[in-house]
Length: 214
Image 1 (cartoon, rainbow, N blue to C red):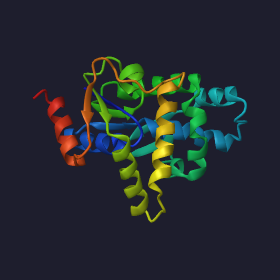
Image 2: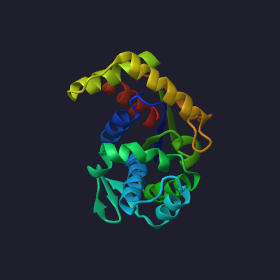
Image 3: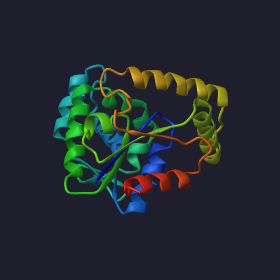
């Protein structure tokens, strides 16, 4: 069974997807880490970010897998390396490149063969897995998403300005919906789940109920 969870940044997709996979005994496919792995490979190869074809050619040669919470790049565990600020700063070059996205969708489909998975992103139910048995579009109000981001940053000991985070989030929303490749879209057959005021456990339980067909 394949379960896709799409939605805007800050809606809680990653947290919910991981916990749902654990609840159901499924594998979690971390597509965000896959794009980060391409960006890491680009940094290591010193690609010219102004020449996007260099990154596309590199991506074609890479083997990227995510399993058991670990991200592997050509057999190397890069789970921690892909989360560095340096990688974060250039991941958009991978995520916005049509040929890189095509390659990673190919790898995502290969990874899902013969497995029960929960996968999250912005195009999983519309592009990567249009035939998924359950598609979820997870949403929350802009104010709720910004509040959660503030809490997350403060928990990590970082300074957080609510107004700046809200403005950045609204800009990100516009960019994600308007992207020419892999834009954020709700699949026609997706179930929309509003998470305002709900704990992660309640959201996961609701999705688990949907997955069980109850």
